[in-house]
Image (cartoon, rainbow over all chains, first blue to last red; front, side, top):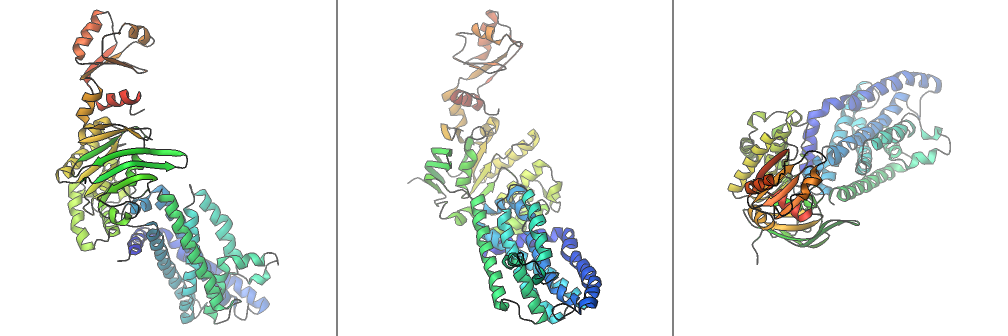
Length: 255
Length: 308
């Protein structure tokens, strides 16, 4: 058995015990956005402009929201739970007394996050398809870039969490990082609508690449950097984030 | 060749400018209960973490079960059990789930772990709590669960870092009893503690640590014979009068320790010393005659008491 799978199993078991607590943020919130913004605000948008990027606003929004939801799930699972494992409950510290190594813990954790993001994404797509916001097949295909998006944030946030001493840094990360990304990375509108000076900022955030790729897969279009280009950026961020997290875990816990 | 389970030579651990463990030597023999006694900050936990292969040594050499903790960490950790200072349990999971997960960390199959869970819960007397969430357990129960968890891989060597700190006397005795049984079953124990009674109860042999160094080594009884007298007379005087009383105590005992609240007289026979003091007209408000303990050894070697 691959050693990281042992940590994967732990994360899955812990989640089984607490999934009810995450139902609202993971499953319900995205639908409220989809209905309020996509359907009701979208009707207004479509009446005024005849749609966005050649599709209805609801169809434009649905994949963007899928990527943003994946980001939030990936970041959330790697924030407080990681700091708890390192500092508050020290369950990761306990795991290091077994044959597991820091990298097993990080990779096992991220593998589980990928599973959970996939789960959240599939349920989201099923409901979005019911609402007519996306095609079922293309929507399910878009789960793949959504998982990449979630993992890109999970790696980086795991690393960041492992540098912290208390939860204030995490509150700030979500307030000043994740929330602005959610609003300004092309989820709700094309970033060409942003002032010129803000556009380059969007380009360097992983979420923009995730939104573009997820939307391209869902709508069958070609994104600015090409599908491979955006996928390469996301995979690069995942690799860097995972390596940074593993290094930080080792530095913090094996001293 | 020594057949010791743990061999440390010149073992040193530094964190930047701070030296936590300063060039110590010790050996732990198979089947014995070996103790590290010392106050907080003496370097006990750092030593435990190096033995447990979760903290690289800075210099010197260390061999555990014939393995190098730095290069053979995973293999070494698969053969030892660790009871850390903090329980570090998965509090949102049940007692049995905690053991299952930990067993899985060692790569054991579920069918191997399942019967072990029942045996271990029996052993630490938690059978009734099998499906209880860890959150709901008392401190003593959590400690016992942590011990059960450390035994899931049937370790040859068990490392316990302050196993009973923070527990009530009854819970401590239950724990000591369990550890004694483990020792009977042939498990080698390494225990750190700042309780002298714990060290006396559990350890065949121990080292006394202070300020990153080992200041004494031996069996508890031998250490007392070597470094202290047979008995101790403790005297407490009315507030403000300790100094004038001390002036009259000269020559009564082999050695005298003056603590802020009392005076300790080291003597072969506390009762006769007490009579002599009485004859000199010394009237303490309270006095106790007792056997010498490891606390006295520590006091003599370092000039400070263990628990401050």
